Amino acid sequence: MEDAPARAERILEGMEERYREGRHRRDQHFVRPNDYCLNGVLNAWARSKAQDSAQHAEQLMRRYLKKDAVLRADSISFGTVVNAYVRQWGRGQGRNHNGLQKVNNLLTEMENRALADDERIRPTLHAYNMVLGAMSRVRHKRP
Image 1 (tube, rainbow, N blue to C red):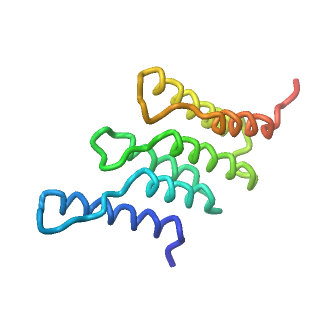
Image 2 (cartoon, helix red, strand yellow):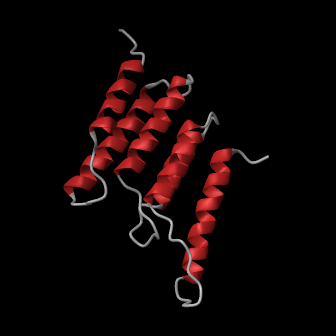
């Protein structure tokens, strides 16, 4: 049986496909998926207990960073992916410096996109707090 995040993603993809197909037909109107739809699916992946849920959430978000996408990822999307990685660590997966680097890279990418005038992606206080919280959970080796 398919799990809830995968079902939610399949629904989102179906909405997008029906919108793309019906966009040029005047006799049919399809609901255009928006950032709330995307962020809801990302949140489903972030809350999933599947081992690769954070990576899957990031891959999905990256698909919707393209300018030609029907809907585009935003600051909430990035924050949700950061949250997915933090939750993954809370389950004992990825508590290492590589995981910390991944979260820090996502935050840096948000900052760089904001500096490049991407109006949809700006680092939020919540994202910074999640990264700081993740840093506090990483075990450091002492020399």
